[in-house]
Length: 465
Ligand SMILES: [Zn+2]
Image 1: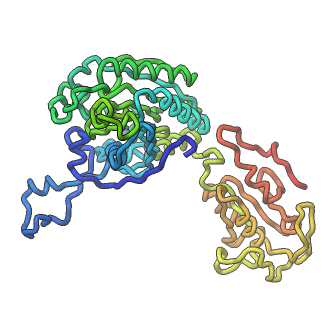
Image 2 (image 1 turned 120 degrees about the vertical axis):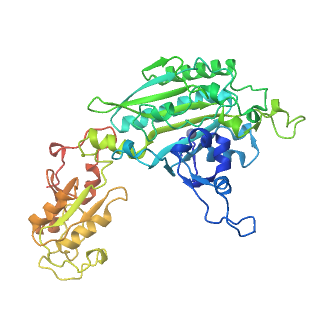
């Protein structure tokens, strides 16, 4: 939201009509999961339906969000003042990948993209792309990867097809695949085969999509790339027929490149959905004329691409040892002894140090703790866990019986840090973190390295002894 996006959640299932309009039904259908309607007697006769009728009422799980976001845009009359409109959507996407193509987390049939679509005026393209590039750069810096960028420009045989071709392959690259672009290439990239849907080219006064528009758009992209100071190259003629695009390759610590992020301009989809906006203040004369109601440019943008696939890349690049800020299991808190382990350890309340344990010494150490009855080690662990900030994950491991077994369990579960609490720590109001020594509970969050920064090692620890 910091970048001006509005998060939306759009439905999973859409009618065949929508997919026909977007062009997916014609060109992407074998990669889509279709859904048959259970209610087949909408016409009221209660009879059975023919295969043809069944086919016509069929629906589909969405393989991408673009058409849904077009519907959001079209749900109200838009003015130039509403632009740029940036819609972000994390909803699950489904693609019917061939069984043989599935692999681990890298290629799955259900996945999530950090998907966004920006609807803007042609004049806004440069600034929007620049912002999107800055966003992508920041994301990969945080992940400890470097990025390089390729601008793909206008394909040779663009003429004729641009007005009618579907942008069915948008959001394909860097999405669920392995980044080799095969999702795009398995669609008809030759625009000549798509130029038959004349109903969609009704607006012959296409300000978008003509040669000058392409040239201006590519110029804006080059300027944005130069301004980003990212290393970039140009791949002439490799653009999609619906607009030029920027592909971002992220290189991990091991030097392997992964095509993840994509920024694609799209002149075609806004036409297919007949999207327009008021170019001047509403109510002026001739406000409904085509000139006064131009089409927005649509920008498809994903920084991470498929989140599942990115996780696979991160896990492989780090050998499973994710950066601490991203680690799903950060600190395990382990009492040295298991006295006073409640039957249901999770149900004990904070600060209820009423139970008598062996260590009842009053403490007022350097941590500023006020005098009170000391808790048991288990209670102390639970208290520390509850005091951690919400972004830090923890678990109290009070079973099984021996300390060694509890530490083993923490290791098996993959906890990043193991903090032990014995009598001494109870007395001092501290925890003892393996590799770092004794520290105050409030210093535990400081173990988490900030994104892009080196991890803390034992030598860095500020032990509060
Ligand atoms: Zn898209």
